[in-house]
Image (cartoon, rainbow, N blue to C red; front, side, top):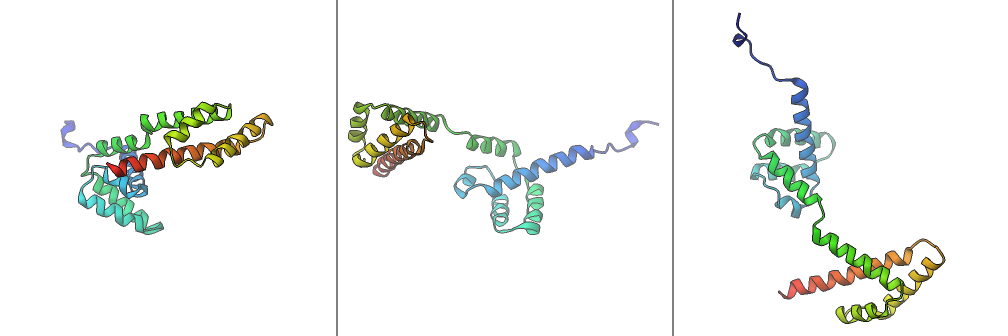
Length: 173
C-alpha cells in the first residue's frame, strides 16, 4: 500500500498554537487606540469586527475574538504584527527628547543658571517662579537624600513646556 491514499492530517497542537496567536493578535487590535488602529493594514471587514469587539465584554467578546481570528486568516498577519511591533517601540526621537529632558533636569538641580536663563528664553511661557521653586526643592531633596518628588515634578514641568512649544510650532505650520 502506498502512503498517498491516506490524507495527511495537520498537527492539532500546531493548529491550536496558530489559533492562539491569531486570538492574541485580535485581542491586541481590540485594545489599540483608534489612531493607532488606522495605521495597521486591515481590510474593512476586519476593521468593523474590531470596532464591534471594543463594545463587547466577556462571552460576546470571546465569540468576537474567535470571529476576528477566523477573519485574520484572510489578512496579511505578518504585516499586522510588524506594524504593531513598530508602534510598541518608542521612536529614536522620543528617546532622545526624554534623555535631553533628564539632562536639563539634572543640570538645573546641580545649579546651572545659564541653562535656566536659556530655557526661559527658549520657552517664553515658562513660569520663572515655579521652575526656580521646583529646582530649589529638588536640590534640597537630593541634599537630604529624600525621595525625588520635586525632581519628578521638575521633569514633568519641563516636558510640558517642551510639548506646548512643539504643539504651538506644529499648529502654526
